[in-house]
Image 1 (cartoon, rainbow, N blue to C red):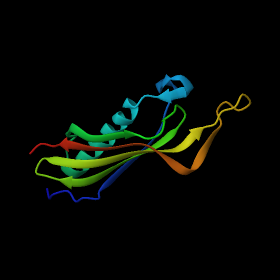
Image 2: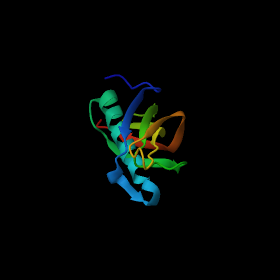
Image 3: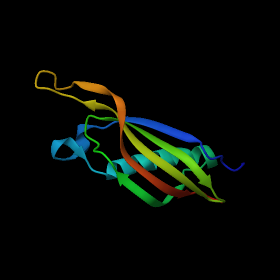
Length: 129
C-alpha cells in the first residue's frame, strides 16, 4: 500500500439526540465531540491503511462554541501528514442545523446560513506496520 496523501478528507454528519444533553440548556459535554473525532479517525485509518488504527494523542483541543441536543453536526477529519505508522489529523465539528423549538412547535429546527465552528483539534493515530 502506498503512503497516504495529505489532504484526504472524511466527513460525517450526525443529529445530536436529546439523550446526550448533559447540562442545563440542552448542552452536550465536550467529550461528545471527541467521540465523533474518534469515529472519523477510524474511517480515515480504514481508508488509508485498511485497519481501524488506534488514537494515540491530541496536540490541541479547542471548544469554541456549544454543541446542543437537537443540533445537526458535520465532523471533518483531514489527513495532515503521515509517517511510517502514524497519521497526523485535523478535526472540526461544525453545527449546521439547530433545534428552534417553541411551545407551539417543539420539534422546530433551522438550517444555519453560516455553520458554527464548535470544536477543533489536532490528533495522532497509529496503524499497524
